[in-house]
Length: 202
Image 1 (cartoon, rainbow, N blue to C red):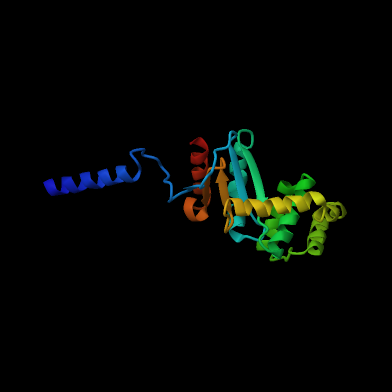
Image 2 (image 1 turned 135 degrees about the horizontal axis):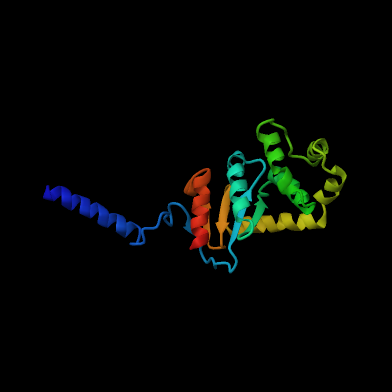
């Protein structure tokens, strides 16, 4: 009996040591990690790195939208499309050109669905213009913005951000310029956004 009590006590002590006596729900190195040389932003900020071509990004889109609706007035939320290679860059330009038009978020669900459910290839400007025309978007204006200086500059900024935060896969989230998490660490669905809320409150 005494041995069992001692064993339970030692397990409890080990848990306290692992959590640093904080009792925190999420742990550095397990659910998130601190960005080396990161400096906490003065404004609550979440950056999502994503791609329309990423099936995991598609899987978290619904939970992201629900979370965003609750947080949009209190948290600065930035979406940065990954542009690692020509295919990813084409899809990044799709998002960025629509964002310049102010309609990216309104059509993101339709784009994700077209790519991942309907298996449409939207990895070229021509295919994108045809698709957008079909859903009532001004494809001519989109086409002009696609290769515009504004979008070119944002593509370059995306590439620099991927390097700065050492993003090797998407979806990935940077919170307050200090913390990193993704579906491999924070989990999928609503659980991921519980981690993000925890980090925002730190």
